[in-house]
Figure 1 (cartoon, rainbow, N blue to C red):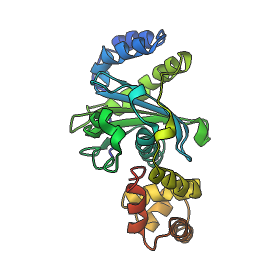
Figure 2: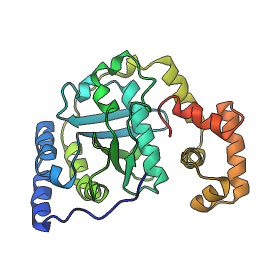
Figure 3: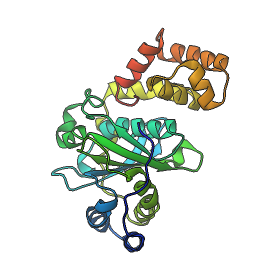
Figure 4: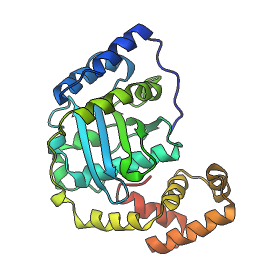
Length: 263
């Protein structure tokens, strides 16, 4: 995960024109045309994935805006999109809720436990980078995550800053238009339901700690990042091990990543 960088050297007047167009979007078709138009010069991407709802339970709604064949909101199962959204949300939290760029090589590993319903969303598994930002009101149920996914191996320069600037217009447009048709969550498999139960058992602080553990941070480093003592981190880790029924950090990370919701 890399830090945000300055936006590309584009004409500010052009951005104001693009922003003005974003303020007048009324339908999902308008949003699609806007994102595929001049926005691409600032934020080149193949898929815009937006998720909101309760990230603790995995009860999420989402929109998928893309020109890739067959990749539409109504074709995507909540049981497969929700783990990816949870992963992206945790990366955003790990970045102190700042715009972040992820260079994952391929989402196929993250989604390796996919079910048969993934025949319509394999295109997402082939994405190689993501630019992620979010908004929230301090409550998990009020958070909204925005991710610009790309098949390129390196995020475009300035993409994180560009998403931060464009996000208010995307969010406002989505809130003003009817929600896109979405498949029901009835196809969610029992394995993912068990995983949701594991995540629900973890506290907010424990989820934050596990995000940093998965990023390779030591207990002292996590303590400094979260402004808590190393002893407190150790106590949280002991609690996490008990809730996940594991005995060490590697097992805890593996148990979460195996279900495609943590990294």
